[in-house]
Image 1 (cartoon, rainbow, N blue to C red):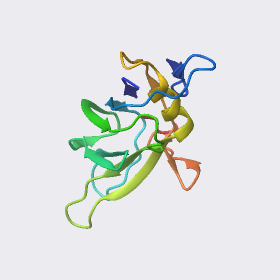
Image 2: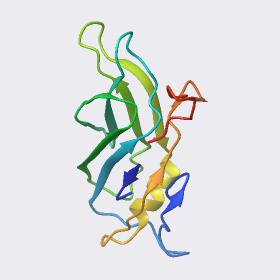
Image 3: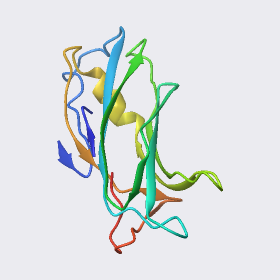
Length: 154
């Protein structure tokens, strides 16, 4: 789940008032990676050692690694700076990986929040908007299935 970004299946910020011009100026977007459910077994021996890489507005942030779990909980936040809210910063991408010190990290899947949603978020007044979203983790366009047979979510 993401916090600070409320609807099941995704976030839906209201954006600017109808007819209002896009707001310029700098903004800060706080992204909290809360948890992931139904992670797949990626290691030959043991459970998933999950971590996330969040990419937004040309910046990258990595969560800590949650060892040996199919249900990871982070509750970790990062603030991304957007120098000009009227410029399109693009999508927000969260890549979920399994940490493996021997063979390197394995891809679990990704969650992408589209540029249109991000644009509406940044069009909100500087005082901000807050919401949560729960997303399917996908790999090559298909849902990732966890060890328990359920779809992996973040």
